[in-house]
Structure formats: C-alpha cells, structure tokens
Amino acid sequence: MTQINAYITFNGKCREAMTFYQECIGGELELQTVEGSAIEAQCPEAMKGQILHSALTKDPLLLMGTDMIGPEGYTKGTNMALSLNCSSEEEINLFFARLSEGGSVIHPLRVEFWGATFGVFNDRFGIRWMLNYDKKLQGLP
Image (cartoon, rainbow, N blue to C red; front, side, top):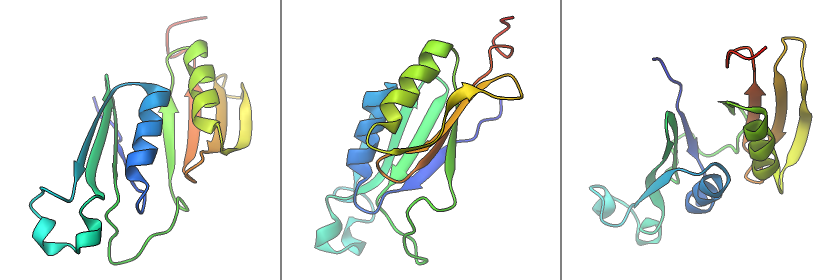
C-alpha cells in the first residue's frame, strides 16, 4: 500500500507540536534531540536541545517533524497541508475538534459534493489540515 507521510519543520517548536498531535490523535511519539546524535559536534551549543527527528506513529499513520532548518530558511506552513482520511464520523469530529483548538477554521466540517464529510483549518502552529471521512470508502451506505 502506498502512503504519503508528512514531514514538518517547526523552527524550535517541534517537541510542543508533536506532543500536541499525540494528545489529539494518540499513538507512539519518538523524539531525538541534536544532543547525543551523530551531528551534535557540528551544531552550536544552543541547538543541542532542539529536535533532530521525531516520529508519531499510530497504526498506518506516520507523522514526522524536526526543528532543523535548511539553507532556504523557515517559512511557517505556507505551502503545505496534511490530509487526514478518517475512518468514522466520530473520529473526524473528535480529530477536528482537538486539532483545530487554538487555531482557525477555514472550512467547517460538512458533507461535500463528493459525498464525504470534509473540513479545513490551520492549527495553533500554523499548519493547515484537511480532514475527510467518506463512509462509502468504509463500505457503508
């Protein structure tokens, strides 16, 4: 099965963001700091507590994040969205409520022309989410 996995740069907020996502979605969270990693000696002292790599896993879901910034610099969520296909009406409502808390709703949850419940918001970290639940894909009438 082909999957798309998101990798997000948080510019110093990775631990906070990934912990928040774990509280909302559940799953297992792994956080690796710069300190103790293979690149520790190459980084300034101030970076040692930053997250080099994180992974939140729950069943087939994999969300990855980092505080490391590439040479192009950091632009907060401008060209990215995370699409989360939910498995039930209860799940989409729960995830939408939890993840959008402290953020801004762009498109409230509602049944769209393709027959699925759909909603869009930016979370409190500036990341855009698109949530979708299509009961036909679940084999329901």
